[in-house]
Length: 498
Image (cartoon, rainbow, N blue to C red; front, side, top):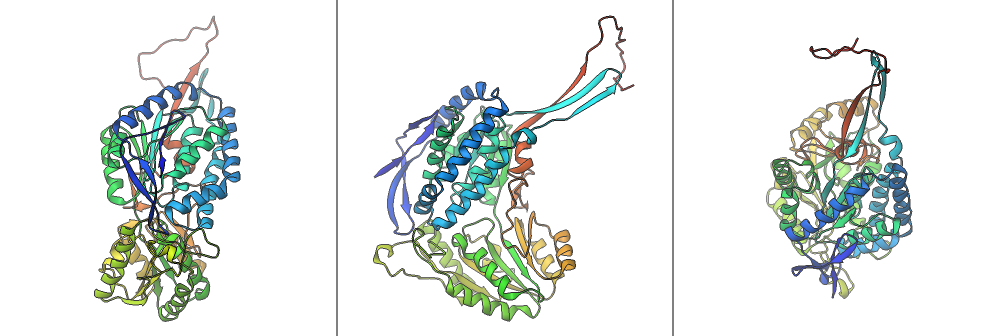
């Protein structure tokens, strides 16, 4: 049985306590991951603090070179890392490779660090006085990341933090921990000094140690809204900066003028890709007007065409859920929806894979629910599984009101051929990330990722320009260089320019 260790100061470190890591496709335990707590977090902070003393003074050129090397290693090892993710998460290898690509884009963004960190200069703001500004790293920072993107979400954090001169401690999900250790090895090969990037595995004990440790300056978190609130409250109470991204209930609105085949095809992929275990998954389709019956008919056909199976097999489009508990929770939700009056158009419960090797895997098929209302559990809860709920609306205005009334505001989409409708939608909707004929509107790395309302606790989005600002703080310098014979009168009044 393989044991997955911590990675602290460039070396593998073990702990006495462990937890099982399962293969979701077979249901079998495939490894043990060590679980750390305050002692391991403290050891990582000490290593990161020592490394920060020299890393903060490294040149921009040195940091960028490490990131160029790291980016190339991510390209070369994409298939291997993708298979590691698939084996522990359950998503398809192609899907895993996609998340690596989206994470690598952030590395490419910080390869242009010289421009990103460039300050400004104002000449002669007063007689003989100039002003300039620049940004400096915070110190030791930490990331607490979810199981659903074991490569991409951490890559939205640590390249930005490290490239701007910080040192980093990653606490990945204990459900699929191996990707974090693999990335640590890639950083070493890229030339990153020991102690700059550290990995501590664990559960709540490790999280609480991060939130309370006085040596950690900032915490980045992605996960459910209740835990995001907890992280934000605890970390800010201990004087830390916090990025806390929470849950979602993403709606895709389909207007009567939309190409229904196109819309249904993309909504199906957005709803069932990665078994719906995405914070940007489409979980609600809002069918407007006479669109509903025709849209549901196409969604039914496409849901039945989704190929479900082990993520490492060719032509599979959707793998299993990450745990047995997740499988049971999702299937129970479908039953609850039916009991509350929803129409189960496609029932994915009880799916069995023909190969007996996967008889105990955590599989469930795509489920499609129609006539869902906003008071039903299937609408109100973040199911985080392959369940698509169809809600019917009479108009675009009613659809906008429905979405704006939802407590989440992560992502949304509108399918239409009308530019006027699209403009009205994107201006009035209270959601942070919007797609027009794009079902999963994840921004590029040079924009920042973050929702509104209960999807973002606090006001700090992730990666892009906002990420650079989060991991650095500004200094403004006012300078005078008087000539030796020049007499400058010092005033007792508050200084003003002249």
